[in-house]
Amino acid sequence: MARYDFRTPRLYISGDLVEGGEVSPAEAGIHYLRNVLRLSAGAEVQVFNGRDGEWLARLATVSKREIRLEILHRLRPQPQPSPLHYAFAPIKHARLDFVVEKAVELGAGRITPVITQHTQVARVNIERMRANVIEAAEQCGVLALPETEDIISFAGWLTAVDPQRTIVFCDEDAEVSDPLRALREAPDAAFTLIVGPEGGFHPKEREAIIARNGVIRLSLGPRILRADTAAVAALALLQAARGDWR
Ligand code: SAM
Figure (cartoon, protein in one colour):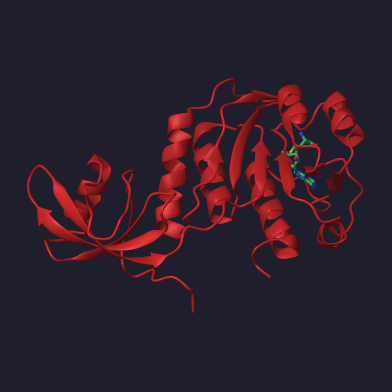
């Protein structure tokens, strides 16, 4: 049985959450409560803001123009952000929404779009990424919202990775070997995962990553996975081997 109550609707609220306080959802939240769930005054929902944990709230007033929520009591404390960072070469729109949503569900604490040599996308809509993060968090029960970073060059990203971190490099050219074993045997550290673009990593990028201390060159098996498939597979393997599933 999941540890969370998935029956009661969950809603992201930007304002502070304190017992006895009152908050109003944003436009999208009002639409969801009133027109999608068709809730009326007295109904209860779970609210979170990414800072104050998760609270039970009651619809105090439901009018044409606004909904006021009365904050009742805290259900879950605010957890620490996940130490798992996920960097990826952005892919086309729809699949990017998918990748961001899966990264939230699979426990990423930071999501960074990285422009590599073969990346076919020049810009990423950060606001859209942030909206996808919130929607995924409402659905999957995440309270510590992953940070979404602005797009960065491959060289800028590699330089910025904390030297204490281990980079899990999903390398389609790596020798096929057991990924779970590779991840289980890695020294204790926080992990930064990177997945390349549809065109794969440039040899110079591969060289630069491998030259760094603290890299696991991860094979995801003998098949070439699409970038979004590779992201889901790698995040799941990382959680299974060293993450919050143990
Ligand atoms: N253009 C590359 C090729 O044809 O060899 C394929 C790139 S693949 C579509 C996109 C990214 O997913 C790769 O850069 C890598 O990060 C990851 N990936 C895909 N298959 C993988 C595998 N079998 N092992 C490790 N990483 C893989």
